[in-house]
Length: 114
Image (tube, rainbow, N blue to C red):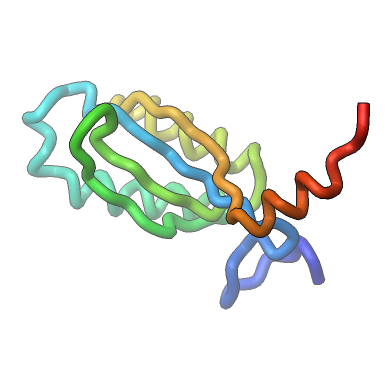
């Protein structure tokens, strides 16, 4: 059934959107770098409690310190995830949705005319 939650498959059966979270932090500074694995595990647990999962997470150089891709069941779950991460003081985040090129092409083809 489209949109149904399955324990064995990707959660977003009715859409191919991936949520991307780019974070700057920890706000405490570089002193928290040694705890990166613990913060990553905590973020994975939070995503699972929200009905989603972390697909990938990377420590990066440049503007953002961490970039993660998530599969969340809906925007409300994603908002709660981001709120939990920022409320813990671990990071400031920017969140975007990413569409596979094929999915975006389908959306563009179905775009209403103004």
